[in-house]
Figure 1: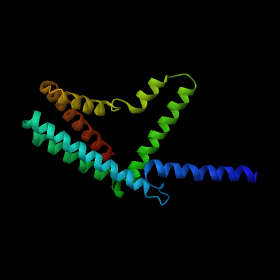
Figure 2: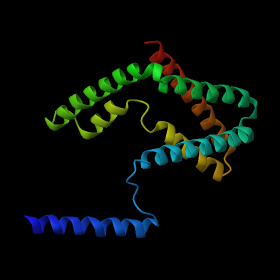
Figure 3: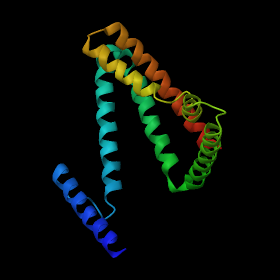
Figure 4: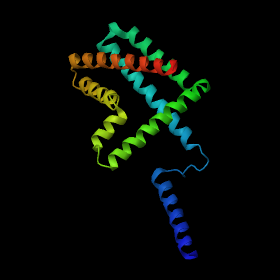
Length: 173
């Protein structure tokens, strides 16, 4: 048994060393990893928003003020949702989502639903539509297809408005 534990420990040491060499850093064991991921996510979202607004300037400049208003409202709503004041609502929402996921997982295991149905039920209409639209927008911009870029920007604007309306509903509950 001691030999097994020794091999496991040595294996972990080599794995950590390999990770450090591959990534040029030592794994974070101080709990800062989550904060770094959070900061990276925020930076990526800011970068994406700036890119989006540059495309708005280029393809739908007449809607720039509307976009600015919607994006600012989105930030404010997210701030309200994430505030300590709404911690209880977030926890209730999270518990409801987890319960739904467990029920769907059970149905999937029992063969009552397919994997595709499981994913659709979990993600609903939101899913990846927003990200797919963003990717399609990137392709349209790269191809200099202004008609397509304009259409996708209008779809995304509608998506953001709908998202904000859902956030307002969650906050009002």
